[in-house]
Length: 283
Image (cartoon, rainbow, N blue to C red):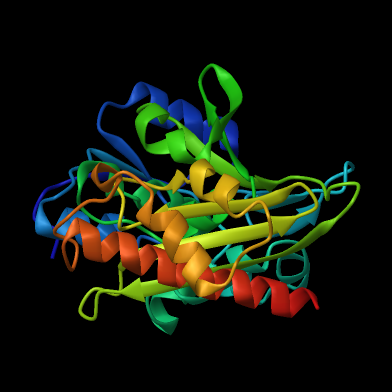
């Protein structure tokens, strides 16, 4: 039960939605509601106005851009993302992250935009699954507000998303000229909440590796030093664990299921698994 009163609006265009968010202090966009409604009921969040995004045209579904990349609408459900054939082909890690999120009921209601903005790993609360996969596959988030449209890096979304802003899409880059070999996602989840204690996503491409981690770290972060250490193609478990053992222990956040040392090791194990899956799928 939500004990605090709020108003409700159902705009018919994105411009109308952003205008409502801009002029009403304390307004919040509502998509699937899997995080926001829970937070309103527990008092972790407050809202004076909920702006329903469900009926807005153009915010749901996956489309191919002219440059060959994919545009994923913010109100696309996690269930839709998990099985979409173009996402599975272009960015398997993203589809796998959607499939690993919560349970079927959560995935049927939860949305891409909601999962991206619900991530609170930067303040030590709850990481979500999509941001780390989006970071690994080099995606960016499109945000619209009263000043227009802009793109934000996934790892900066939590810090730079202003009140009154609306996430409209997740943009996947066009394929490399030499092609991407594959990508994969792995997760160790908290048994009660199903949020990731540690989640990793990797991409193997012609230019080398991309490795991103969340849950074990203070937010979704790309580990460029690990990528450099794997550049010679040594992705067996001992080599990956050695690359992670060389990372500063302060990068890993104790208290999410174990010590910083344990989480650093766990991130290495999950990364080795993800690299093996990405390579096998492309073979």
